Image (tube, rainbow, N blue to C red; front, side, top):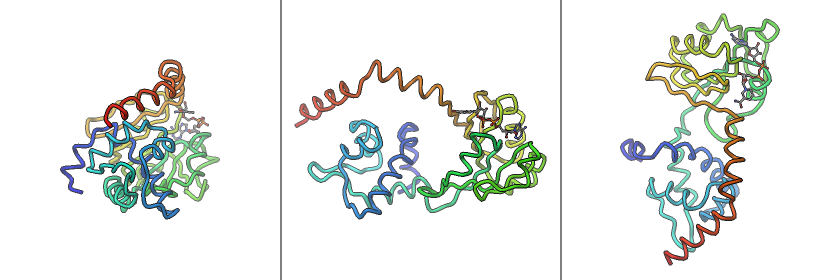
Length: 226
Ligand SMILES: NC(=O)c1ccc[n+]([C@@H]2O[C@H](COP(=O)([O-])OP(=O)(O)OC[C@H]3O[C@@H](n4cnc5c(N)ncnc54)[C@H](O)[C@@H]3O)[C@@H](O)[C@H]2O)c1
């Protein structure tokens, strides 16, 4: 797929790609050749109209009664998500959340890997968690070794200060789990993950857009099209 085409994918669609990729990869391992948008929808919890629209951006048009070709989709996702290239990630803050991430094997389904971690506590630095070396935060600049993506799991009060150091040392992408809104230069991308907000939004959607209604609406639309 050409770079030009990839640029046309809307950000919301791009964010769902890893989700699709994981599921399709599992199907492929099970030897499945095709998948319907309904099957996908149930597995990844994205409504099938959205899936059809997402897939149409990269020229995958499902055939009625056949669905989508799993291999074709996987080939596309691999290229788009740079699955063939390993992205190394640094983690800052080896507390409750950070430790859980280090113990979780990110490599299982895609090619991002936490390769180094930092903490300010002298109890943690010098050790390994989940096989990943943990260094004292004082060594940040010496140990980043060209890593360009970081996960931030420090207390909120430390977030900006650590971010400034990361950015000064070439970090271009930050997955921010702290509640702090961090300021970065325009070339740096920050994705903020706030479980409380996600949970509130889930509860809101449950209340105002129950899945039952959605299914009925989708069925009505597909019947109209027939
Ligand atoms: N986004 C979410 O959904 C979510 C969920 C839980 C926690 N959090 C946030 O994630 C962060 C971590 O939460 P936690 O429960 O793991 O906290 P924690 O206190 O268990 O861990 C924080 C770790 O950061 C280390 N630390 C403190 N200052 C540091 C510095 N300057 N440099 C390097 N390391 C430093 C501490 O030694 C500690 O190990 C907090 O900001 C918390 O609010 C977010």
